[in-house]
Image 1 (cartoon, helix red, strand yellow):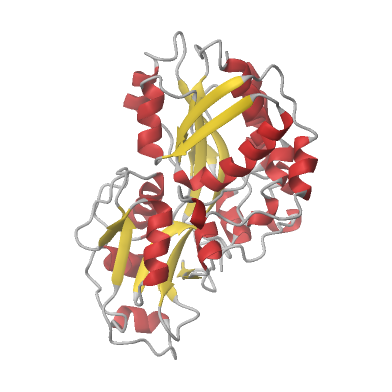
Image 2: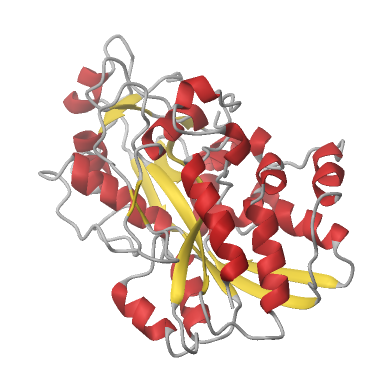
Length: 380
């Protein structure tokens, strides 16, 4: 969620954020051929692995959910398993909805989700978390990019109302007046827009819907809480990897996925006209400025966040995503609890975050990272 347009975040540029406390959002795909390429020097891996505390971790740990954190999980799992002999972490990138379902059925130790648990999902989790409930632990965050393929157009600007109309099949031509006004001097073709969306339940879809609902309420009348694509028309593809591949292959296409998918597939991304002085590009630094304004809405051990999708702050990219790990605060299975805690302790540690620092994703606020670090050891 080219995407990793330089990602090194300076503390002076992001105010409340601290690079050493960075949590980085990775790509959403479940297909290996769309994953962000690994660094061949292996330096980060060995350095991170040398500092991992296994803390009684053993056996197999099953997890499932958000494809947005699939590439992050691949890196974390690789390092953790290298450091902790005999441990196997199996994360299935089946989408946020599927992960929560498996968690609430007791099939996995934790779930990844691009949106916080709903009240009914929390209530359902109490059947599995004996004496406790499922809690949302922010782990990675970053921009949801709007990718497109349009020959001869390298810098496309759109705003929320125009995006809403495109994805709602109300703007169907690339040279529509609304698009040409936002792109003076750009030669736009008189061709049909091919809009792609997720076919599976997705927190990425939900976050895009929240953005469109808040930033363009007159043009996006669909349920912002829906993880399923709510609009008519368009073409569907499975997972962020599927949408990215479809956009990469189809001239005149547009779709949404995490920034790293655009980077890995060399897909051009839209800059958003938010009403600020200049359109805002989908970069890690710009997403960080939006995430910096996040507020904790959860209570106790729950750290669900509230994001301002309608921000007009200078340089703040508004279509952002925070991905959670969902685990029981109490009532975890005794046989998997040590591995669960050791693994999550690593992923939220400075070492775990630094592994992803070069991937180009947005850090979460330092104070949120610090809170997660205090909560993970209390899981029981």
